[in-house]
Image (tube, rainbow, N blue to C red):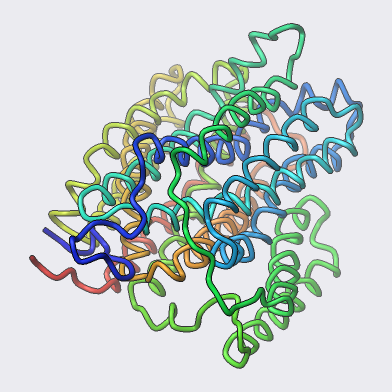
Length: 476
């Protein structure tokens, strides 16, 4: 079996058991936190029309309802991972989950658009505290085949949050429980988060805080400002016509991130251990994660726009069509660990190629004059490709990362994914909106979506190419 698929991390006791064994149910508790935070990244898109009408929100305000979460999340993940290393991952996971639950309540009760935006930013900060801890805990609490299954479950959970976000959101809004309308997509997190929080101490293994170290405040400021300076113009630039400040922001981001890299090499308590980047699997792996998210995030966004604006489907109807994507994802992800054990790094190349083939089928399906049934084969194939990439990716990227740096390594991985998603949306958006024009009709949206799939296919090809740079797996 490939050791790439079953990474070992840190020192183990002599009997071979994990350093911090996970009680039964601990993995489920961790995955609930990942599911609701991933879901909230996608689910809000279907509620935007209702939010606009209810809160009298303008275009800029509704953009920030979406962007505020992503900006706070992308800017805080590395710091969140480092905090988990310093104060204990279970403690930081519980703190992040509690903050996310409270922020979700604030979103659901928001009386104005400004209040909702602030609460969404708070959700993003809380998610940045929570998400890196999950991979860090898995890396230390599971071993061998159990760790492979745990990483597969992690990838499956993230995929379900993204794939079924539109369906769940559309169903909640359609149900209109107690007249809550769009607010239900946030309020549903409150009982789930509170119930899960009550189980954390009993089910999630405690991890000791790193002694003799402190949080690198200068490094935190540099990386946070650098990432914000990069992501902010990507979110706002296209809508505003790429004014001069966006280009100054990009330049400032490069300076800040370069300064961060120098500081990490010279600092006494670096936010990111430089030793991580001496591990080929990790360095190449975060590049793969970035390249793949260029395709992943943009695919979901522009597919949703095509289904609703190009095909005239409601949020619930388009969500139901996403079940074809979900079926392919589920079928492939349940076999991804076995495939990784057989072919190692090539499972990522295979998944990217399958998703590219699905996009080619979608281009053909969009061109047909028939109904949406023509889209189902392409959606199912694209979903299968996503399952083959996302399920084993974390195990492959974190192979060899020691337990001491597990949460900060997970924070770096998640940051590259979030930034990759923002860059992908911006780059693919240039192609999409150039074709769409100022006064689009459904046929224009269809043409724009077909053109948008071309760079998405290119990003899949880049993912497959980068997978060849991963170290070859040893055989046991």
